[in-house]
Image 1: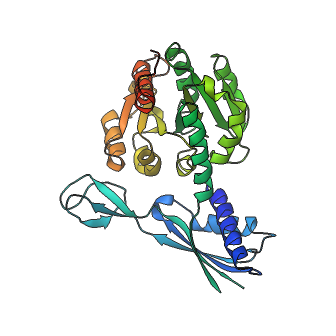
Image 2: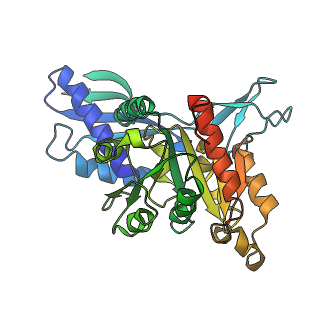
Image 3: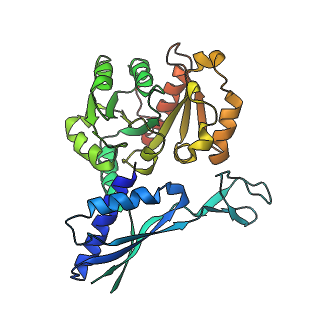
Length: 113
Length: 223
């Protein structure tokens, strides 16, 4: 359900960025979404289509790239998948784990005409 | 033509949250974002808190619900300042809703402001409101596997309150299992066992609030 609010933010960011280049319309919006953000792509795309109506982003293509959840152990430096979000290093059993990927939610770039 | 953007999608929300935080800090408010499933006991905990905090810290509440003012009505009976936000279809509160609500509260008359979020274990964890700390409630009737199903909210919260412990004997909820599951995603998560019906654990919760207030503002606490 948070997809609606996120779609609205994405449209605002895309329209503002297009405005800085005096673009006529937005053709494509490329978004990077970390796995931890629990975004359902089909829902986000549906809402994006709805909230972009009557803006210069209407009809543009929303492309979602997913960033996998990856942790790095502060103790031994091992990098590993955090698929089930268990924050324990598989090599040294350390618990000081930094998430180096999977939390981002960012508009990377847009294509305009 | 391609335009490089690299803007965080929630940046607008975060900016407003930072503004809220400044207002809270200047009014010496400790602010909690209280999250849980529907029916886990957020309002019941706040009813208990209102009377247990009397003479120690002044409590105020912003409460978000899809519909009705029932929670606010319950809390107003406790004689504390309450603002009800009716979110309509929104499944979570965002920073702007809080910014608008602030004009309806005298923050200088509040020490601890609790923002009772919409009952939901997914969306509220994504939106910063300007709070100092996120607190969540898991009730024993929901099941001890919930931390595995909704890891993000357990990870975002500093304190987990396990509520309805008076019902433990009627459920297959295993306390050790629940805590181990929660600490898998958040190893240094603080946990308190509470029953809002019997009052067990409420004084520990009040101590926790007083400690957090002291940590933020020094020894100016009255109790």
